[in-house]
Image 1 (cartoon, one colour):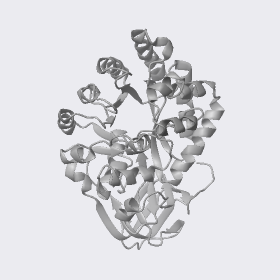
Image 2 (cartoon, rainbow, N blue to C red; image 1 turned 135 degrees about the vertical axis):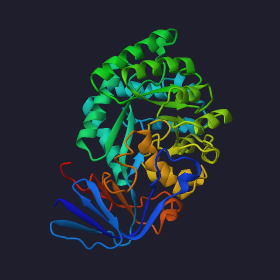
Image 3 (cartoon, rainbow, N blue to C red; image 1 turned 120 degrees about the horizontal axis):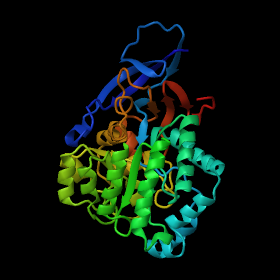
Image 4 (cartoon, rainbow, N blue to C red; image 1 turned 60 degrees about the horizontal axis):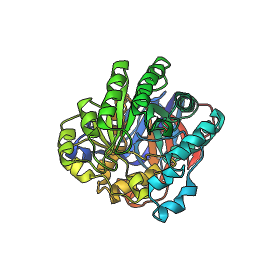
Length: 418
């Protein structure tokens, strides 16, 4: 059938602000009670309160008083990796410093080793399992990075796996090359050589259309602000968009580089300086916050209230990865944004839909429920939007429509060709 009618929606919630949505505007959300959505092919055709049109050749989905929001957009993940790191969990709980775990061959080096050893088929199957879980939690669009290769061959293996996942699964995946995720041990005394190698590898990534974005981990003990700027300038020359890991542990100038070079997002920001918040508010770079990482590592949370109150555009992402956020439950990330970042539910909705869509250059297609946009729609078993954030730790999803097609119903993925 070419048309779908979702009827009996208790309340529809969506941002209708022009992105990037900043400061107080983040809490301005459109609500429509007793709503319906008419879908034609893969687009939203109508939104209203009383459908009187023709129902011939129309699939009717009765929402039965569920609430409705746009499909969720998780704009910072490390989806494809080999193995896992549960063997380090007891050490973390016991207080063993991460650098000590790293010296023992653990941490990111453990994941790099396992990713190098894994076949493409193993990486695909493991990532697909996680991707299916994310879909069940209402994620319809995802950003995913490489970064567990630290050599071109393994980075390519990750990127090709992401392209295959994007082609064969419902969730749209936007791909980022994170070649500068860590300094490989063999380059310990050859930093310039490794950075030049990453910059050279960018040419291959671009020529073969393996990624849209370039990311760098700008942090003490990883890559400096000057090194980051050097990589980013070459990325811009080649036509990449920029995203940045910055201010996770210490502020060493990365956020300033991101603003200067007009990066799409600057991510983490637990240690962001006040002067960088002021500059960020004057820019269109999205402050992408990752509260589940702070939760798992028992670290400080990013100053979301200060960022929003001073006029920044904020998004919230999971940072799904094997070392600091081994959870596919994006809804829990949003609930942490309420309880730990002190964001109100309307701000959180904006931070999980239209702002990440803007940060991924796709806000003209997704991120809000509006006529003409892609029909990425989430139906939740919750009394209202506040209840969705308040009642934490469970899956509120009842149905997911992706590109106008019902792909999850009653928490079950509908198995068919996408």
